[in-house]
Image (cartoon, rainbow, N blue to C red; front, top):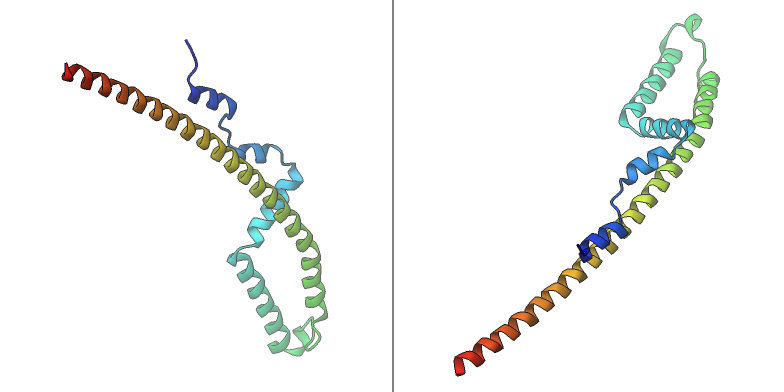
Length: 149
């Protein structure tokens, strides 16, 4: 049995899930970077850091002097810890964003392939419709000739 044009197109451009393709290429460290990027980029993480900062600064401003461990106005320990967090999280965030960017490129390439496939399918359908129209016109002409006789 002869293959239809659409079957040929489906063989030429098989359907694939780019999300699965992308995930299968990730190393364990890449997965960690994406997890960190997804968790840190949330309001929940921001609220945790904000709460920690408010509690830390409030304790070291408002508590009795003998209980303060990071004195006002310098807050040296708080600044040190904050800088350590930033130094470790920023590269991880950048790595995670790069990986997510690669995923976006894969999706864009897949969309392009899908568009090419759809264009070929539409072209095939239009050709079939043109052929049907020509056949119908020929049939109509033959019918008109028969009616004239």
